[in-house]
Image: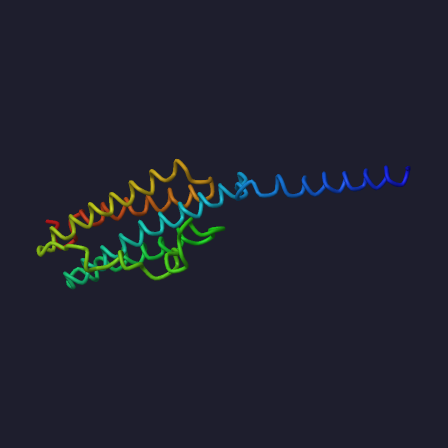
Length: 180
C-alpha cells in the first residue's frame, strides 16, 4: 500500500509539474522590457531624423540640377547635409519597427525619396527661397525631436539643427557680388 501511495503521489506531482510548464508559457508574445522599448524608440528616431535630412539633401540636389549656376554656392551646404544624414543614422542599436535594410539611414533612398517629386522654381532666387524654407522646416523638425531623444543623440540633433538653421541664413543672405 505504501508503494501505491508513492506512485500516486509521483504521478500527481508529474501532472502538476507538466501543467505548470504548459499553462503559463504560451500567454502570447513576450513584452519588450524598458531597455528594448528605449532601443526601438531611438532606432525609430534615428531613422526619422536621417530621412528628414535625406529629404533635404534631395532638395539641394533638385535645386542644383535645376540651376547648375548655383552648384558652387550650394556644394558646401549640400556636403554638410550629406554628413548629417550619415551621422544621424549611425549608432542605432536596432532598426525601426517595420523597416527593412533598404530603409536604413545608411541605405539608398527609398522610391518615395526622389528628385522627380521635388518642384524647383524656374527663377534661381525663388529656388533659393524655397530651399531656405525647406531648410528651416528641417531645422525645426530636428529641434522638435530633441524632446524625445536620449541625451547623447539629443546633443547630436541640437548640433545638426543649429547647423541647418545656419544654412537658412546663408541661403537668404546677399552674396558678395550683390552687396553694394
